Length: 173
Picture 1 (cartoon, one colour):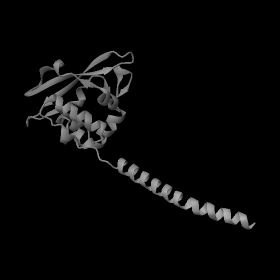
Picture 2 (tube, rainbow, N blue to C red):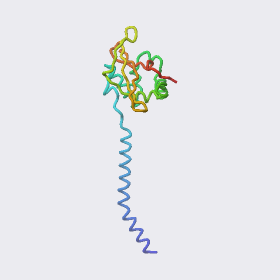
Picture 3 (spheres, one colour):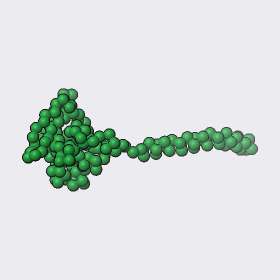
Picture 4 (cartoon, rainbow, N blue to C red):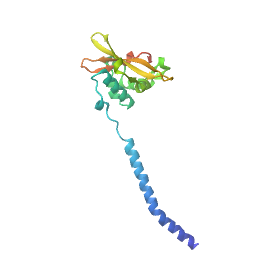
């Protein structure tokens, strides 16, 4: 019996430094994982402004994709904000659907779409309001780009806003 206990002591002594190294590695891995998960996404206002229809739409798109709903809500026109509280807006982004796109969610429409500045068509939207319809493209199941119009409105302060209510075919819950 004595030789066995000597061997187990030797094993414990040998395992000691390796165990400590393993514990240190696990702790470092946890620190790196936690630090990576806690990194904040840059605020939309850092990279985008609402000085043009394209910048406002890009800001809105980035804000939705990064869950910065307060910044996205600020991109909405006054008429749209009157229809949606911030809470109802968050709900609508997740659960509204575009019927013409086989009930594609509004979130996917916003995040997956892209715009081409050369396809802008300026037109008058209403009394005293200048608006731009931005061609917003999505790829359908066959990979064909299909255009959907998004109306941007120039507000009195010169900033551009998205008119969420004028997106054709959106069904709000």
